[in-house]
Amino acid sequence: MGVGRGSFRLVVSTAHLALALITATPAFANHESELLKARAAVELYSLDHQRAIATLRQAIAADPQDAGAYRGLAGALWMSVNFARGTLTVDSYLGKVSRETVKLPTPPPETAAAFHDAIGRAVALARARLAADASDADAQYQLGAAVGLRASYAATVDGGLRRAFSAAREAYDSHENVLRLDPRRRDAGLIVGTYRYVVAALALPMRWVAYMAGFGGGREKGLQLIEAAAEYSGDNRWDARLALVLLYNREQRYDEALKQLATLRAQYPRNRLLWLETGATLLRGGRFAQAERFIDEGMARLAADDRPRMLGEEALWYYKRGAARRALGRAADAELDLRKAVGLQGRKWVHGRAHLELGRLLLQAGNPAAAVSELRIAIALCEEDGDPEAAEEARGLLP
Picture 1 (spheres, one colour):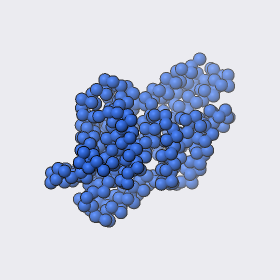
Picture 2: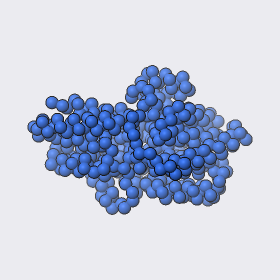
Picture 3: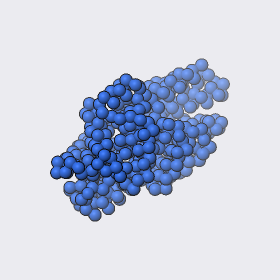
């Protein structure tokens, strides 16, 4: 990863890609609120975002002093924004992808206002508990989770990097304090471990900036903390598993990512994007026939699902299957999928990568002139949508 504003945005957004709904049990939340939050978590990770938002509002009504319910609502709102922007997949956080110059759709004003209101209430409730008892580990947890989510929203939606940096540092410090106050709270290792991992992966100048600001580093230590959170009985164990899918993909530890995805598919069978992520992971690992099978199954689920689509979702499915078929040597089938991908609404980087695959097909077919046209389109689209890695790949294929 590079150095500068884009690097920090990646730190914050990667750290919280899978942390939108962290629902650790507050010390005094009532039973009804707990049941509603648990139901909302299933709804959220089953892609029923609006239903989850409604359920979390019920949880708040059941217990207006439950910081976790307010934070859960803020997290569900943030995930709905990511869904509407087409940024709810691992692809958005891998390699050298950088979004600092990309203009993404602005969330509806009412959604933004609802997020800020909910996260503000979560932070205020946690701070009030800490003012009454500074040794309250759960209150410290609630504070860190809330300000961490505020950091993610600031970096990925508002673009306020200075505010995001301050909130991210407080989230890290708060959860380190949880581990100090109660070492049994391995759920606190999710935020601490993710920040440690991502800071360790930064280029040296930016890494020193992070160290001086108070962040710890250590790739392996970070992964160990997240793995422990995934095996812990806390409510955020599923968030930890999602974080591991991302980080194992970054590490090219594809078999381990696939194990996490198998567990997640069993837990959330209505989340069709888990089939997409499984196919994408298999593609990265060079297991193209298996990738095609999972993508086929996921596309069948998509066809039978009348719920809203993520922005550009169908184009992404066709691009992934086309890439698998191109790698399998099935040129005609691959071209059909890739042409379909570029003809559907989608993110420009998805269209760009589909044109890259079409360029490969044309080079293999001995048509370099047509391939150049596809590759130049790929370069322009990928650069415009913050995907320099794919743009560089396309340049490398130019005859």
